[in-house]
Length: 246
Image (tube, rainbow, N blue to C red; front, side, top):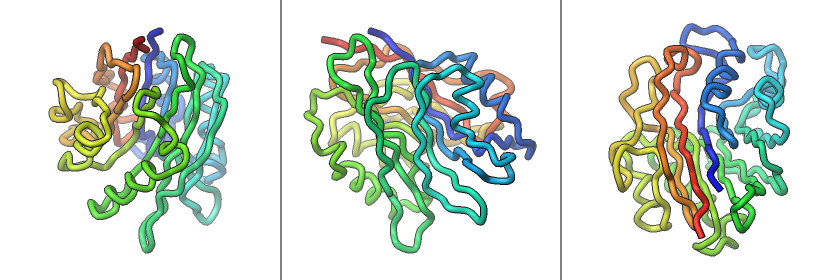
């Protein structure tokens, strides 16, 4: 079985032109046609995004029947966090709090997805790590020690993806060298040479990544070259075609 996954920090669907345009985000998703979409910075009930539940709105616009939302940041009115959209059934979900004392609220949305042809429910961790390097290893530790991750055998199909805010590529080796993942969003083997995703209009950093483990193999990696992606958000999306292998 082959499936396509996308990770995208949508910046609340507010582009670098400061316009709220969820239809631009929906157009990018539809163009790439991923089976599973991992979104970060998704508003729910916030005035700047017309009070919409952006996860529900994008699922509706793009035709995804399954949705999970994990809210992390509380605003004066409404909240925002991560959302996972899927063409396949989501059978379990939980939002894992990654917030550290004195730091901005962060989270990781866990979902179990029944992907046809993959022999066990696909465990997906959709995360958004902190801006400080001191935060990020601790937040990865929270994910790894969560009951959802800790119970997984190394051969269980697992994906960890999202906005890692990993400017100097210090977090990636934790996944590839210690935890046994492969990076599905780089130009070569290993974790170096990641697709550059931030800032979208002239990217210099590969902040957004997809890591896979278990009976999963990255077949093709897709940098986004659509012109609209340079303005739709301050990040570019990353896309990978994944195969379940026996």
